[in-house]
Length: 108
Image (cartoon, rainbow, N blue to C red; front, top):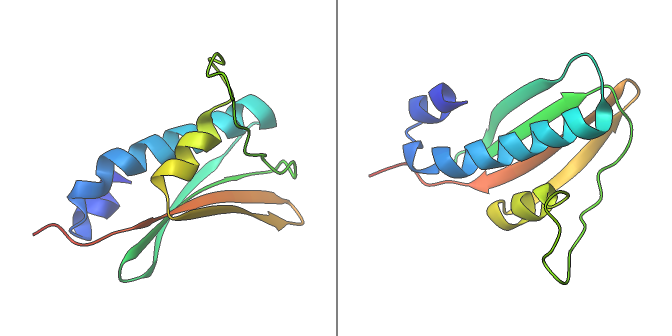
């Protein structure tokens, strides 16, 4: 992922992208408990980067808010929601892809 963002001149967005991918991978590992996952990084348009995690589970993640802030776990999608312009889940016959999109301007 770092290599792709650097190749696209988007070095300023690597830190946010790393957090998003880390949280999506953690969710896939914690909730999917499956043998494999795949990270997908695409650039659907000039100013957008899509960070996706593919797994074989069809369970759709749910954004949970913790009103009192005491939870240690379960806040991954809150981070994804705050760092991305939009995020979602694409269901497939074989599983799903959970993704988040960053709006990006090339580094100057």
